[in-house]
Structure formats: C-alpha cells, structure tokens
Amino acid sequence: MTRDIVRRVLLGAGWCALLTGILGIALYSGGWQRRELILLASGATYLMFATVIALLLFLTARGWRSAAAAVVVLAGVLWTQLPLFVPDSRAAAGIGAELTVLQSNLLFGGADTDALVHAVRDREVDVLTVDELTPAAVDALAADGLGTLLPYSYLDPGPGGGGTGIYSRFPLSDPVRHQQFVLGNLSAILTHPDLGPVTVYAFHPLPPTVDSAAWAREMSAVDTILRESRGPAVVGADFNATSDHAAFRRLVNGGFAAAAEQAGAGRLLTYPADRSWGPLIGIDHILVSGGTTDHISTFTLAGTDHRAVVARLRLTR
Image (cartoon, rainbow, N blue to C red; front, top):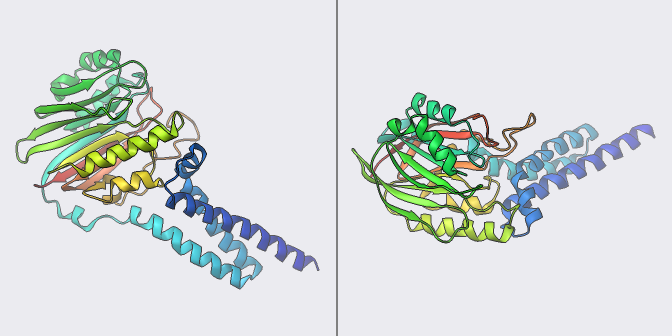
C-alpha cells in the first residue's frame, strides 16, 4: 500500500513537472503581447528543463507511458536548445576580414568608463556600441582615452536610459537615428580598409516591463530595418529580449545571425549582473550579416547591471 502511494506521488509530481516543461515550450513558441507572458518567456528555458525532472520521476515510478510522453516533450526541448550549442561549421574556416565588436549597457551612464576603455584596448575592439549613454558618460569616456582607440563616433547621448552611441576604429558616415523608437536607436556606415562599407547598428528597444506593446512594435521595427539592410553588417544591442522570445528569433531568421549561436556558445547570460544570484537571462546581443563568429564572450563591468558582450567576427562581401 505504501509503495503504491509513493508511486502515485511520484507520477503526480512528474506530471506537474512535465506540464511545466510544456508551458516553457509554449512560451518559447508564441509571439506573446501580454506583459506577463513576455516576462515569463524570458526564462522559458528554465521551465523546459523541468521535463528532465519529470522523466526521472516517471522512470523512478516505473510509469512507462508517462515516461514515453516525457521523452516526446524532451525531444521538443532539445530541438529548441541544441542549435545554441553547435557551432556553425563556417566559423572554423577563418575566412574574411576580422572585426571585433563590443556591446555594453552603461546603466544610466554609471558604468566604470575607465574599465570599459581598458577592455576596448585589451580586446583590440574595432566597434563599440553602448546603450544608456549620458552626456556625463560621453565626457568620462573621452577623458579615459577612448578617442585614441576608437577615434570615430556617432553619439546620441541623453538623460536616463535613452542615450545610445557607436564608437569605431574606422571612419563612420551616413549616421541615422531611427525615428520609430522611443530611445536612441542608431546606425552608421563604417568604411573598412579591406571590406569597404559595413553597416553598424546600435539598438535599444523599450523594455517590456515599461510598455509591452511598445516593445513588440519596436522589435518589429528592428526586424524591418534589418531585412532592408544590404551588404555586411553588425548589430550591438540590448534588445530586452532573450533567444526564448519569438520576436528576437525573427531577427535572425533572415540575413542576420546571432553571434553566440554561430559560435555555439550556448546561452550568454548578461542580466542582471549586479546581483549575487545573477545573471539569469541573456538580453544583450551581437548579430552579424555577411560573416561568421570566431569567438564570443561576456565580462563583468562595474557600475552596470548588464554584462558586456564582445565578439570577434569575420566579414566577407
């Protein structure tokens, strides 16, 4: 009798876990507009991993039919996750002109600008995109010597979190502030000595915590801009979106690819970086069109709640 009760408890707990995993897949798959669902979808992967727990509980209880159902759901989970850990075979070829891109959210301009400049120097960064760029942060970066490393820039600083900037080792032209957005969202043409023109984008859609409908509209606007892009291009962005969001995955279904996925780097967690239990999700991204990714990583930058992302790319025409 006791053994039967234990078995029922295990099966019940297993089905609770399995339904949690199914919820994770549903959140991953849907293009949700409601704020609560968008926020839940940020961590859909964590919910999906409950499927593994469900399978173990079913096997322990010898619930073979339930275990078979868990295997089917687990296959769906692996279908969503494995591509993130398998590097693009083209990335190993080492073909193309090298370009190192660094993306950082400065948290209302409060990040350690001296440490950021040192990172640019040590990692031989060619392009730096920054979000939440304030006038004071512009002055601090200049005082710390960023201009000697990246002498060209297109900046749209502002109070609070609205400012954005592009710094470059190579000349920039044709600057654009895209008017579809509330915060600063920029692009410019970089003239590379070996490639010629390369479009650089710096995006920062409104977070869904502020206005979920605006976030969805702005992510759609990013998608439109990228689909109209021609030639080699790179993107540095705080998208306020993870790879579990359908709105983000639409951006990399066309001519652009996520650098982290190209490199098989898995989930690069970037936020929140100022908590002992973080970061938990990856909302800072580098995208590339007309190229591949040799390496990508993140690092902690004092004074901000985002980890910075740096990628070594190889671009071709």
